[in-house]
Image (cartoon, rainbow, N blue to C red; front, side, top):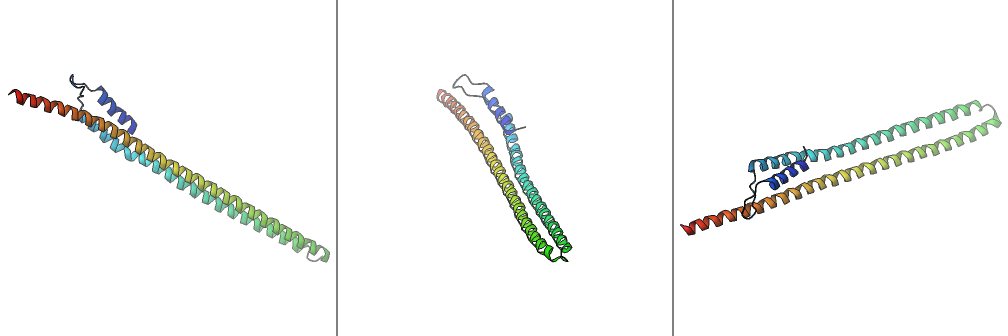
Length: 188
């Protein structure tokens, strides 16, 4: 049951209620109108709870992004260590040969440089992923807050309009009753 449906029911109750022949006043079933207003009040927390669910999903997305970034960081570190170990093993094989030692050292330096570049690249990618995820989560949070506020504002405005019309109708009805009583008092 949505707030909008209940407000539509309240409007239908007002519009479909019988009218007095003089002045176009409407008789409204007070109990039914109050029942509808109670349902609107009960459902407002439900609508707000849905907005809170969106906020919680944002937290879940952020947690997943952090986990992915940490896993990527660990993977990069493991690959770096593997590359360094491979370079060290390669260098140890050529230590006995003087001419090859220089080539191995150069190759090891190149591998270290490459590993450092790859590590930096992976870290940059992980940071970009984290920033994108945070931006998306913030966007979702902003949208869900705006949507919740919009829904609340629309519900409040609609309820206010309906109640204002109802109040006007009831005021006019009271004026007719007072005028009738005054007329009766004058006649007697």
